[in-house]
Image (tube, one colour):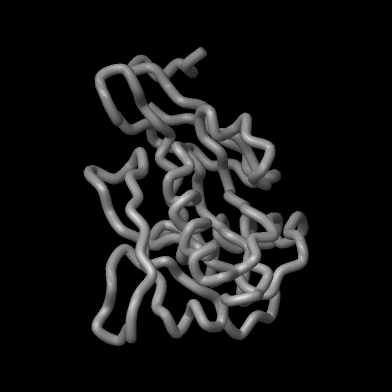
Length: 184
């Protein structure tokens, strides 16, 4: 089963994936789809507020983060990692549990990155907003670092997230029943 979606004029068929016995989601994955990544970055930049830096949670939003930075001429962007790395001098961390992740994970940013974020206008990106947990965790990291959140953007908003007015999105992605019909 698939669901055809139009993302600001570009169509894709998303496979429907089981999350639970009564819930399926449309699998939106930018990895490997250069045309989609470039298109979405272009369209989001048209709608973006003025910002100093971009930040996104690891991992599915990495191509979008990179492409938006490239297109905008930025020489720096930030990634909230799923765990501390050996090269980090210290970390800010927040717990997160998203709809597509089993169990609780952490998002972290390096204290050296936090120094650069402090006082800067930050634009938070993600590929899909579902429960909003990755977004919330990234917001918390930016706040801990002293950044100023000027906007939140995603390619798609899924389920109840589609009703949020604090996120700029290119499209809405419904939730699905096991038979592939859209949930009411």
